[in-house]
Image (cartoon, rainbow, N blue to C red; front, side):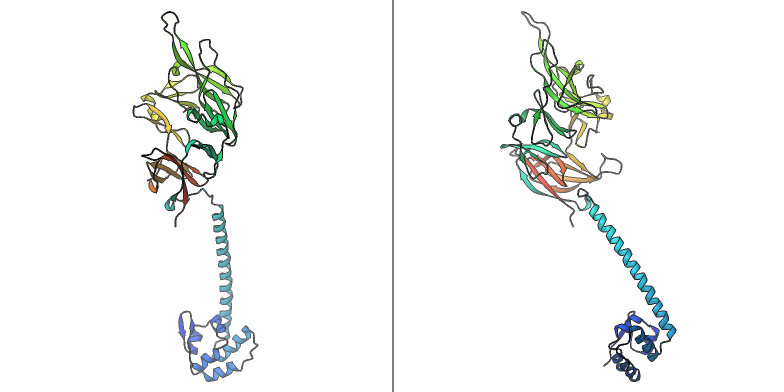
Amino acid sequence: MSFIIEINGKDITSLEDIRENFDIDVLLSHRDNFDVWLAGWDYEDEAAQVRDLPPDLSDDDWLKKICKIIGVPSATLTAAKRKRTSDAKKAEKEKVVAEKKEKRSLQKRKNVKKDEIDLNNLEISIIEQKRKTLLLFSEKGFISYDSDGIYFSKDGQNFLPIDDDSLRWTIGAWRDRKELNGYFVFLHGGDLFISTDGVKWEKSEAIPDYYHSNFRNSAVLHGIVFNGEEYLILCSQDLKDGEDGWFSKAKWKEMHFIAKSKSLYGPWQTEATSRSLDGKCVDSSLLYHNGKYFLDTNRGVFYSGDAYNWIESSEYDKNWLDNLYMSEREVATWGRTSTCNIEFLPQAIKNNIVLRSEDNILKAAIVKKNKPYEFGDFKVIAECDFNIYKLYWLNNKVLLFGIRRYTHEEIYAIGEISNGR
């Protein structure tokens, strides 16, 4: 019975083929049936000699005997052994290198931060929706409310109720809310509320009124910032301006002043600003950026280097105010009336990915290298059944806040991030 031995992809059917393609490992793999191969190709004498070899020979001794029987020179066997040893060392070395490479690759994968995202494979699935309205967001978590109360969440999924009636019943009247130096702060009327965890709140020492005999009410707090050295709050009080008498010409005007303190808990010192802000309704967009203060009013943006003397922006300021980012979430832009407005920009940047919304569509793009506010082409990565007006990254999730177009119902949803296939 004949069968073929294969060496280096060649069919071996004769001793000449074995001698020309000598391979130690192939011969050893056929040690138990090499006599059968020989007999099958009519090498009966050689087959008989192989059968007579002692079965307990070592592989090395067996090879020496076989080479003598089939006519392979000892020099060929020696060269083959050297090559075999060399190949084994090379293979072992390549194995070690491959193992080290795989180990480095595995370690690299382990070291990859959870918040690193690949835009090419980015997928965002809207997995949860609730009826909630956003009050305050930071990297520590966010505060929201619904018809049942006000809540804090640090992961976007678990909500802790805030049992503070002074917060609960004044939700719609907050002037400013933000995180400063690890504190959550809310301004309401003349009160400053402070929390370190978003759940337990306390009031700061009352901001003192800016004393004037013609003031008719207590101070109202409009916005708070930290300039690197101290906290600063923009306040206002109504001041009677003009003459009293039988035909009174006096009018009430809103006068602004600054309250400053090294601590959120006071004490606070007050000082009047210039009259440039008087009589203007101040929103809650007091910002501080690169040594300048910015203030949103009903007449556009005011800016100041010291928070006391304010300059109203004009067309001449457009070049440096337009697209001036106050933070990752706030930007100064020009409005419809050609005046500069500080407004919330509905986009979120994380690492090299930027998200933005267009009604109910969520898009993503790559931030251009060394140009943090210039982006590549935006691609659609998700759609939802409500219009998105604010979005954030938190714990490798996308948090979406929006409103349904027809019912005007405010919605909160979680976008679950995956890198696709």
